[in-house]
Amino acid sequence: MLMNMKELLAVAYQHHFAVGSFNVANSEFVRVVVDSAEEKNAPAIIQIHPNEIELLGDEFVAYVRERCKNAKVPMAIHLDHGASVKDVMRAIRNGFTSVMIDASHASFADNIAITKEVVTLAHHVNVSVEAELGTIGSNEGSSEGGADEILYTDANDAKTFVEDTGIDTLAIAIGTSHGQYKHAGKPELKLDLLAEINEKVGIPLVLHGGSDNKDEEISQTYLHGVAKINLSTDMKSAFFEEMRRFLTANQSAYEPDVIMPSARKAAQQVVKQKMDLFNSTNKA
Ligand code: 13P
Ligand code: ZN
Ligand code: NA
Image (cartoon, rainbow, N blue to C red):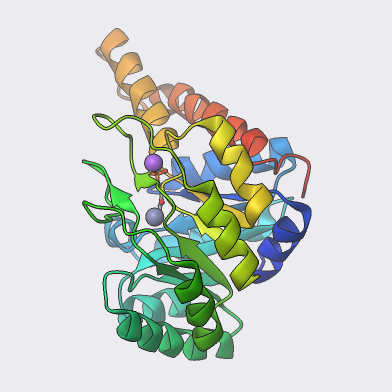
């Protein structure tokens, strides 16, 4: 069933687990997420980045909506890292039930102003809003962007930001980056800062850059207000690594129904592990 993300995250926030939000870039990944969620009896979010919408076309969103609607578990369809009011409007027109406006690179005042504008627009049509304060890091190859240097979220600013904008959920920077930590090694997350932010803002928090972190740290985050964890790289890498292996071993393969299943299975294994790790298994 298709839901507004606000309702989905309220349950997670209250019961101390996190809903996985997975970036899809084609129908194979949609199936990976929906099948995993149903098998794990876990709520899940499908998120699409503007670059991915550019790749797929607006009509694809209608297909994702239909899949979410028919799923046996609660699901939401969310715009990941919307960069402008235009991105948000396009997403709302196409049936997203939730949007992110990421003006985290702008000044504090400008971030508040643009986020406020999006909240007014989106809430009018019952669409939930995520915004970001502070900037998470970026690793090579990730299309979701980020900054070279992490700007940690300030807890007092977060309180002001949430009160002034009326957002439903806040993305915070506590040490993660998009993508894999190839050279730098896995970061140490600032869990004390997370606890402080959680205490001050009192709304569900979002952790971006969910791939390639220490499991024992991830399982602390949802004890301190994180109700949504964004995951892209770990799932996509598993899919394409298996596809690469399969195509190398089967040089003349060309039929999708021959090539796709093992890749899908590999990605699904990762997604199901994450649902266990996020403590969202059997929470549907
Ligand atoms: P990862 O690629 O590190 O999983 O980050 C995903 C993300 O934050 C998408 O917004
Ligand atoms: Zn992100
Ligand atoms: Na990451």
